[in-house]
Image 1 (cartoon, rainbow, N blue to C red):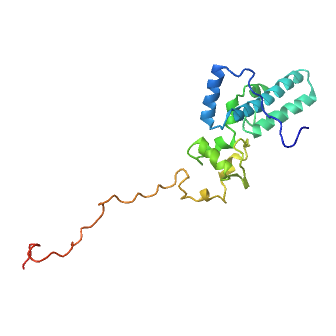
Image 2 (cartoon, rainbow, N blue to C red):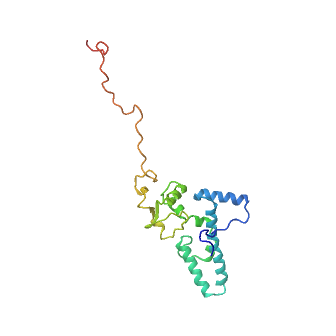
Length: 205
């Protein structure tokens, strides 16, 4: 069971720590999806690895006409369809094996909040989520790596208790920019000026 204070690691690290091509590809994904560190990427890879491993097991069992394997195959495909990783109809186990890690990363709440236009960048979307400014339906979610289901995708919005939910908040994309103050000398109407002593203003003495 383990110590409740120290949760078990939910991801697998690469077998070899120094691989130039892999490190370069990982850094590109971190930048593209605004991930905090490589642990988040490895966690997504582990989720995908479990799905693919289960699909390979079911493929072998389905060939022997195992009825239970057929039910579990439909359940796996249905679950991935609800997560938005596969089409809702016509998907097969081969489609599960064809998934890549970007399919999982694209379903994270951080990515979808940025795609929906709630933030200027993926990094800002992460900040909004962690600080409690984003909700899924009526529930505030503070986990950037939360996998959004297909039915929840349309309910991603600013949390109603957050100040960013106001349309004029400057941190929101599309909010009107504050008007700049007029430059010195612009818009000033010349006044009559101070009174001048007799004989210097050009008037009659």
